[in-house]
Length: 318
Image (tube, rainbow, N blue to C red; front, side):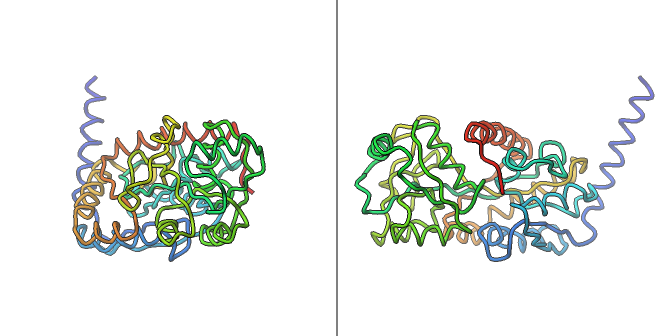
């Protein structure tokens, strides 16, 4: 017992020493997606404040590839010292179910720091489709099985999985049409090449307000201020249906808890800044403040939820 107590005290002293000295050099945050995308803009909105708060440069390192897997692999194999972090996206919770033989384990190779933001999707249809509610759409889909085409930003993306979840919960059969990104899918939806889509709010709202698309429901737990008259999917009759796109920061597994807590505290202060909140609001993003433990619980719940959807739909990334 004395030996165990001594080891525990030594570990505590080492961790305290590490946290006290941290950070003493630049911090790198890896993002597995290209510069200019939604996640990149979110990350670059918070990095100046993090750098100011932590007293060290915070560098964004874009490493796009394999649905975010390249970036995740880099961070999974990095030293757990708080100097290499990952800007995580829904792929952290879904890619283990989508890809075979990943070189890392999303469930064990990372340690949650905190969420940054989330954005709901919105179910939109081409106005030529004679449906005006989710109930109308379900009825139409059941009368025309497989005839409705729904667009997404790619196989296994959050927009694709939102559609797969809708198929399962509504008991309908749709035809998925993947695109290389949301803008191309939105363009074809407006032109009538496809009939429906689960789209991120920032892309869809201007088209809805211009009358080029019809919004049937938002996929978050509450209505969106951008479309206050549009019900949630749950209000529209699909109980328990939610599908959001989120971003958060994680570190390599083994990163000392004092460093995790220090990073989380800095992140909370940045997310409290009016300029950051204003920028997020303009992008249609919701600021999300939580603890490492709450973010970890969310990741586990999202992983279990989407594993069931992916498995039942037989979805595999190409």
